[in-house]
Image (tube, rainbow, N blue to C red; front, side, top):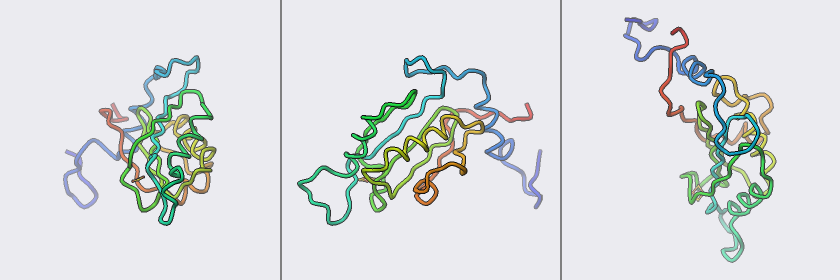
Length: 161
Ligand code: FES
């Protein structure tokens, strides 16, 4: 059994990042969006109920406006899915970016005008080679506004196998 430097038994086959690399290096992830592109699918969950304190309740919610702006800019192999609340209400607007074999990222502090930045961040996840969203190239709001990252669901393989 492998042990950590302190002598405690190591749980699992290695650091998570190393295992993720093996999981997503499987050849040719099949596209499921139906387009001709051969890119990894990315799902952009957008909270449509996000609002800010003091917002006029008669006006459309900023989260709904962001979802609408994204829907008007279709990108290959990216699917925009509206949801009601991502549990990040105090730092709205909120989005979650998910892709097969990748970590899922939740971001906040966005606004109705953030569509281009959301797509740029989604593209980083789409082209990731290690399942992580690259820091370099992230739009500024996606450096400051990360709320959480969640490991992939897929069973992970050890890179040493
Ligand atoms: S209302 Fe948008 S995260 Fe809760």
